[in-house]
Length: 245
Ligand code: SAM
Image 1 (cartoon, protein in one colour):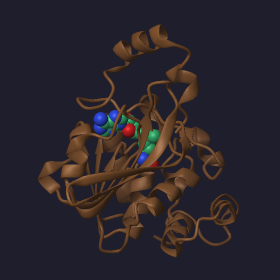
Image 2: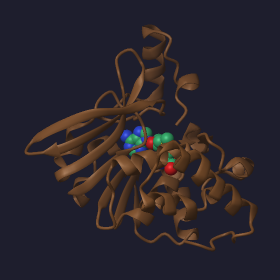
Image 3: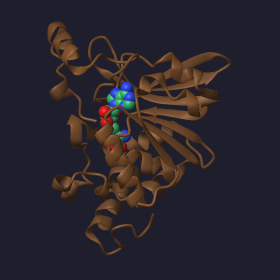
């Protein structure tokens, strides 16, 4: 993907190189292929024009449909935790802008990505095509059910936080497959969980605290109106202010 929309002297390329050095390398990210991919994928071509000038800042940014493109650091951490290699088949739940799918595509063999908002899926497909990404298939649907038609996967990465890891995800992994997903606990805090599936058991470990938009679907949270009513009854966890990935 080098040369897409910029060159080495371009201000975006400079900002991207700074992002890799300061936000990723110096925070301990070590997977050479992930760092190279983050250094190549033109994040500014996946964000709305109004925020393009801050595309390489150390934070998530708003996209359409009230959703977000995740902070670059979180994108890199999730791919590194998922142990993605050039032979991996990866399922991403929550295509959003298509940016993480593009980074994954540079590291993995094949990527299937599901998005519940049709408009976001269409825009992501267009951005992936415009940036020359060929090994990502974007589908519209409820990713809480996984994507049985294309299973099994070596890794599943979810970019929205549900109340648990859906059992269908583990069923759609190869032995030794990894799930990396934010999970929202009963008190409203979220944790990034890495789960390894082997011999019929799922071993979960917590990687770090996070704050993602909600995973909405059959095995996730209910649609926003119902969820808003629910969260306002149960306490201070307000979706609007708390979720930022
Ligand atoms: N990976 C994205 C990127 O690089 O821009 C970030 C996505 S954003 C943090 C999370 C996305 O998950 C949103 O676009 C949201 O619509 C989507 N989402 C939430 N629940 C979903 C579900 N059940 N199935 C598919 N997508 C879902």
